[in-house]
Image (cartoon, rainbow, N blue to C red):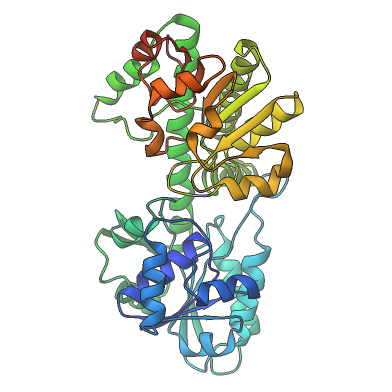
Length: 429
């Protein structure tokens, strides 16, 4: 099958590489010459384990083609995916301008036959109906279209595995012919098939991310209780998670969630609920708790650190990615700099992205121990594997003062205190 994917961010590029790897011919349409040049040369631009190898393999096999024009790509394809960004506006609603602009471009280049246009971008309920209208208003004579919603559920850091081995494939459409085409494209993928209408498919994506964000905020809420009472949040949540109805997955306390999905999707679903007259108190609380988790962590640092030199390990919002969008580190570094602290930080992937924000206001180093050396306190903000078994004896010897704030609860507080650290976890005595 020949398909086109418009957009080459996490969703677009990973999807393109996976579909090409299954033997399909995949066009990828972008608009930034510099990025397209790098992609054509096998540079995936983003940090994602295994992506560079898959990209290079399928470029070499001539199954993956990058272009800045729609005409040949769209006319050649049976299915066209929209995978552009839908960032939050200042009021929390999703900015759909790129989706609608792309839909109009696709429409004007359709071939005089049937084409499925599928939105993989995360969009509020009703967006695909609006896309369908744009397509019908702008398509040339003889062109026939049907829209489908096919949300993605990949996680940054494990995006290829999640795309190749999904738990479910969701296809929403009112067109039997579009559903048949989409099922055919996804036939090589495992996972349950959920075939539904457009509104349900759109809402499934937001509901999925919002419940995961809720579990994280619930864990942080319990950590606040633990901090006040002397309870241990890890022991509490371990016991709670033993109930099979609840489970432990994603129920972890820390400095809060970040990334390109949870913050904006919770806000967008909140905005949609307000417009529909739905009580969204729960969703607003999820976001409020997330913000409080960061502020509470910062307050503890400001209260307990005696000195102005702070080392940081981990800047990305999660391990195995260079993404710092809405990352707790951005908030914390920004606030600490404002208060006159000197920050030295290390992250194996995200340093350049942080540099774009803070420039020479932050010192970025190439080795973990260089971030530790001479610091009055160490903050661990991302649970990269290399930090989990780092030589803590050496860490202590390099610190000006053996003060460690564990923003992801990756160390044993008893052992840390036995080693002589002044240790502060999240909701741990």
